[in-house]
Length: 266
Ligand code: FPP
Image 1 (cartoon, rainbow, N blue to C red):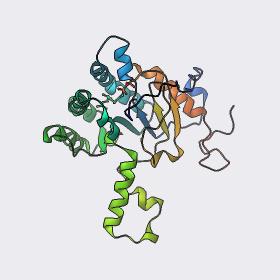
Image 2: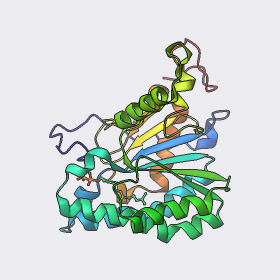
Image 3: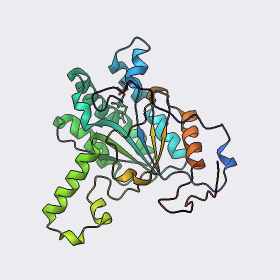
Image 4: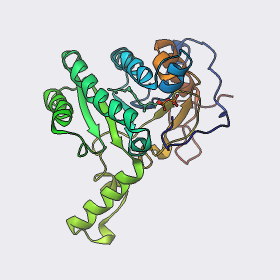
């Protein structure tokens, strides 16, 4: 992702696709509760086809419904999608304008179907720079789906992890809380993600292996999975590879014992 306005010319070392062992071959290993995705590679997907970058972004919206449904069917409770970062404003104006319009329109287009399926939409980031029309598309979708409880989709739109942490600090100072009353739980309660479980698995498509200012606080113990596949091509097969790789990991949260039912695996 050109999330920081520059490209990394060095190819990242990417985890090879996990062997295609069926998920039921790994009994007792829970699906991640919260999966967060850095959706990268729209531009390259388009360029390789002789299309404009914006055509790549449009293609990147075509799989949204399928992806949400597939994660839901696999038991994931929360799916966070990094749609536009605070650093994406540094892209060429035409691309920024297209993305800023496209994302609320896709939300508006998809919301009825998501609502029917019991999906609750939440937003993390700031909607402030949007025009009232675009802003209300997102706000109306959030309001419509607020009581749904089958799955939560968090749209990270104009989101930046550092900005979120700074904002949380500001809120705490403004609340007048005493310094010795601030612990990790109190701090986390002021983040955009308050009330959501921390991500268990962060997936990045498009072949690079950076966090790009995504969920910096929340990712403390997340497993990271990168795939070369460009976002418009990310599908159910890719989802199963990512979940399979996750189930093979041993999560120790800084301790010595696995806490995901996994004793030992190579
Ligand atoms: C980066 O690809 C991708 C983005 C900036 C996110 C755009 C995502 C969508 C349009 C789909 C999401 C929509 C909704 C409603 C959730 P890139 O331009 O960095 O690709 P490149 O690295 O190949 O240039």
